Image (cartoon, rainbow, N blue to C red; front, side, top):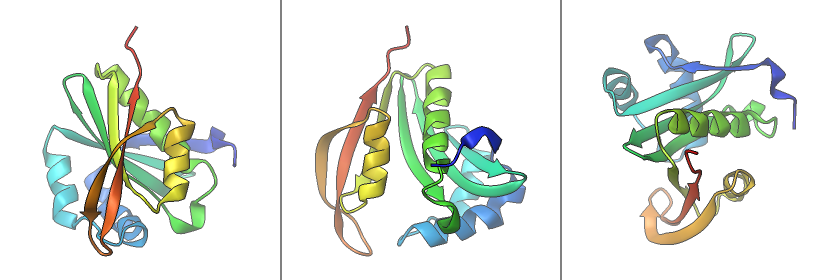
Length: 153
């Protein structure tokens, strides 16, 4: 894993949409649309964090925080930049954001076959709490539900 000293994290802006969409389409078999990301930027319930190094966008993460709960909706890293710590960096920043906004409970779902992502989540303390049968499409696959409690004290 590369040292993330040079990684910076910031909020997504309109100018990031093309780069985010390129990563989104590369990372997911059922990608979100440009319209979905535009709606997130206009709304106030979801936040997109951008990870970059030397001004180059390497990945992004989407969180939704409601009261004391934070749901990790998306984490994607550019294919050529994977296995370098960017996903871990993003996840830690998303957890910090949630905690800063009063969340102590964190949730996510991940494709059952996505072993690298599941290992990343376990590394940060998430544990399996359930299964949603046939949750994903393209291809049809179960979702593993995971959660993490990080007390606010």
